[in-house]
Image (cartoon, rainbow, N blue to C red; front, side, top):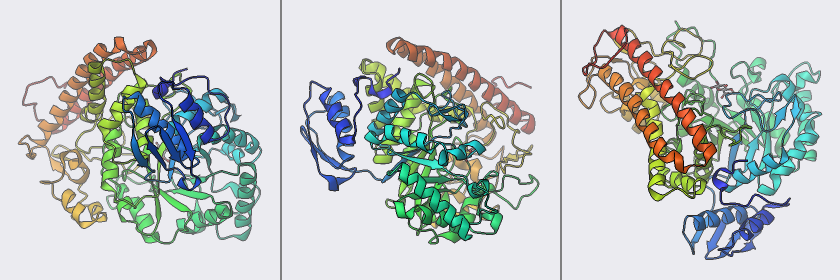
Length: 604
Ligand code: GCW
C-alpha cells in the first residue's frame, strides 16, 4: 500500500495503546536521530522540542514526534521550538454511506463501510489514523451528513462495531464523531422529533448515554438539518438554536459537542425570483441567533457563502458572529474543482481564508475528506497535498503555502532531485489559478455540469431551483450584489464592503461574483471583460499543456504507480481544459457577438 507522505517511515508498526507509545515507537525507528520523550499531561496537544528532547502533553508528544521527524527528514536538526494548535478541534468529515458509496468521493469506495455495515481493513484504518495524526487531525466524523436511512443504525445495533473502529483511531489521538439524523426519534416510534418535546429530549439523552458507554472518548455529533431536504427543527416551528441546544444538552454530561452545519438555504428557489439571493441565506438564518447557542454547540460554516466553488469570497457569517463558537469547513474532495482528475492544490485557499479571519474567531476547523479505498487513498497522488496541508494549517494557519507544499513534496518523494522537486512545487502552487482560468474565472460560479459537477455546462444551473445563476445575456454577465442589487455585500464589515462594492477596486477574481458587468466594460488592466474571459480560457488551457510537459519531465523520477496515475489523469485534464475553453468561449461568443482580439479559434 501507498505510504503517502510517510514514505520514509517503517511499515511494521505493532499494535500500540496510546499516543505516547506511538510517539516513542515512531522515534525509535529512525536510527540517525535519537530523541527522548518527556510527558507533561497539562500540555495537552502542545509540545516543545529542545534538541533531542520532546516534551508534551498526552497527545502533544505524538505531534512533537512527527514534527521532529519531519524536520530531521528535511535536514533540519537541533530544533528549539514550542508549538500548540491554533484550533482545539481539527476534524475530517467523511461523506461515506453504509453501502460503501461515498457522496462526492473520487478516491474509490468507502474505507469504513460496505454492504450496509462496517467493513474495513484494520491495517488500512490504522495507517490512515497514523497519516492523519502526523498532520495534526484529531477527530473524524465517519458517516455522511446526509444520513441515509440505514446509517441511523450506527447509533443502534451497529454501535459495537463503531466502538471497535474507535479503538483503532484512539492510539493516534483521534476521536470519532457521527452524523446524526434529526428525525431519529421518529424511527423509534416517537410521534415527533420536536426539540422542545420532553420525550424527544429524553430519547436523545439515552442515545448519548449508550454511545458514550460504548465509546468513552466519543467527540460528538455533526448535524445537517433543514438543508437540502434533511429533517430539522423548522418542521416544528423551532429555531436552529432550539434544535442544536437540545442535542447539545443531551451530549453535555459526557463532554460532547454538537457541530451544527450552517449550510441552510432555499434549494427550491424559482429562478424567476430575483428577491432571493442564495449567498445571503446563511447570514440571514444565523446572525439573529448569535449568542443563542449553548457552549458545546459549534456552528460549522463553509469557507464561502455558496458551496465550495472554485473561487468565492469568504463567508460573511464567519466574520460577523461574535457570541457563537465557530467551525470553518473546507472541502478537500474535489467536487467542483476537478474530481481528483484535474490538479487543484488548496494550500493557497487555506492560507487566504485563515488570513481573513481574526485570531480567536474560530474554535474548530473541519474539512470534507478526499479519501477512499484507492491504493493511494486519495485518487490522484498529488491530492494528498490537500489533506496534508489542511492538517498542518489547521494546526498552524500562518504556514505559507510554499512551505507546506515543499514539506509535502520532500516527505512524499524523498528521492526527487532538487530541481525536480522545485518544478513539482511550482506546478502544484500554480494549479489552482490554472484550473480557475480554464473553468469559471472572475468569480463566475456554477458553470459545471449539473449533478455530476465535472466539465462545463454554462447554462446547466441557470433555470434550476438551486439559486445559482449568472444571468449572462447579450450585453452583460454576473449578479449585482451591491447595495443597489441584492445587497449581499452589506453583510460584510464596512472595510470589506468597500473592497467589494466598487467594481473599480473589487479584485478581478471576484468581479462577477459581486457585479453585473457589460462585456465591453474595460477592466483594470485595459482589456474588455469579454476579452479577459477569452484570454483566461485560452491561457488556462495552454497552461495545462505546459503543466503536462513539466509533469513529463518529473514523472520518470516518481514511483512507478504515481507516475502512471499522474500521466493518465493529466491526459484527462487536458481534454477537460480544452472542453471548458471551447464551451465557455463559444457560449460567450454567441451571446456577445464579440470577436477575440487575438483571432484565436472560437467555435461557432
Ligand atoms: O455541495 C453540496 C453537495 C452535496 C453535499 C452538500 C453539503 C453532503 O453537492 O453532495 O451533501 O453540499 O455540504 O451538505
